[in-house]
Length: 414
Ligand SMILES: Cc1ncc(COP(=O)(O)O)c(C=O)c1O
Image 1: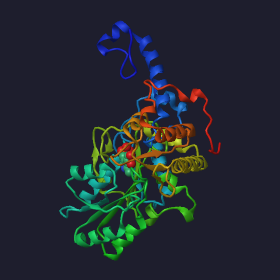
Image 2: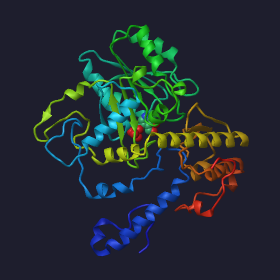
Image 3: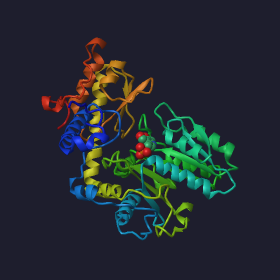
Image 4: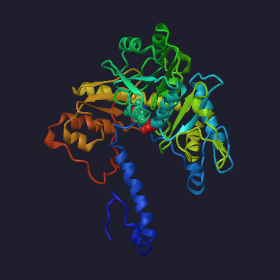
């Protein structure tokens, strides 16, 4: 029987007659295919340089369900809520949260933003909070506003992707009679710009807006920014006025499966949701049953220590600097925000976008550098960008393992 890697090796209704050997061989082939294909995925911020082999048994042989509230164990014992709380506390300390903090591990940053906006809706009963986010904010903000029937006001973003604080002030001035929620994006999806949380809080103070929340969507960048020296650290966290922060695990923290950590400065309204007798725990989260595996993956990643994560961030920035310089030298329009892993480029022609994963948006595309981004892949992309369209070699399927070709990167520190 022949099969491709695009799907399963056999239909499930044939499973009894075909059996495990083909299936297991297929898993190995699929893993190799995915590893090889990763080299050409330059666009998405899924870091994969940290792996979690020591967790293999826990990941594959244990049911772990952190149902309900992380601070309330519930009837069952098959959970990892103590690890979940340790992850929350560790990050909350790094982000300057006071001891009144509260949080939980979500399925991703989108769920964290959804929880924060839902909570804001509940916090001001009958008063209709208005949400402000820049035009560069992630689509999950508009989705959560639609779900919770909240008005979303778009704030201008400057050409780098940063929220225009003058425009925010003008808009807040028009809505100051209502509670407001400002979603600051710290690491915008396309350009990795950082909205200035201290300036947002100051704008609210100047307008005497006390019924306010500032939710920080730092899906990619929270930990890398927190590890910068004080004089370089952008204002993005609780010390600058944030009321909640969310950051993804499957991005910088290389958890390899989607998750995020949502942290509030103070226990939100949802934290007062009553107990469910059946689970024995409070129903404070968006889902009911929640993964007990993702807190372990987060814990595993963070247990490498802050020096390791600082080095990973520095290596990613070093590679982003290299990428920016190579593109600039080749004459391909490219830009990079301060501290960013992301290099924004003019959208390449279709044959280059077909060969590389570059997340084109119509006019731009981007490369997000990670600690294990292969400089030889960057060199190859630059070559593709500068050669006539007809000579760009299409991506093989399944991709050959180019690393085996033993290319030597040029000009990049080892
Ligand atoms: C700024 C920003 N917020 C939220 C998200 C969504 O995060 P998640 O995939 O963890 O839901 C992304 C994803 O790229 C993002 O860039």
